[in-house]
Amino acid sequence: GGGGAGGGGGAPATPESKAIRVATGGAAGGEGKVPDSPGSPVVPLSLAEAARRSGAPSFKELDAEVRGDDVELSMEVEGVGDVTLSFAVGVTVDTVKFRVAEATGATASDLLVYHGDKLMIDPLSLNDFPFIKPPGPIRLRVTNAGAGGAGGAGGEGKASE
Image (tube, rainbow, N blue to C red):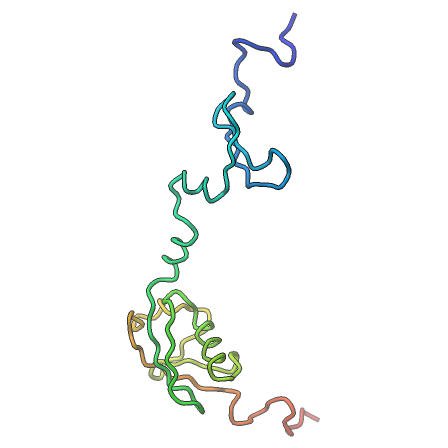
């Protein structure tokens, strides 16, 4: 004889019956619901709720931790003058250049950011520089490599002949 499909009583639990399923809230009927235990009503459970129940930090908490405190940067921007902006210390130098470009109309890729005579390179974040300490202000200098007309589009310089 043999216990057929759907056996009952004292049959050992299958791996499927022990698995915990967390659905992400799909649109189809029945998706996005997780039974608390066999025979209990099905309850909706979002990813946010699953994270909250697990004790994991929220995205906002993780983002705030990575971004860090705000620091004020007081920048002498070539051809423009003083520009003061506030940044989270977790942002990159590239982000600083982009925001300065937005504020001044410059092209971000043409900007170079310096602390004294030291170039602050793009892939680094502000917290990689020991002199960047919130709340600031931190004095920086921004030059514009594209300013001065040395080889922009429409220039009269010739390519090698």
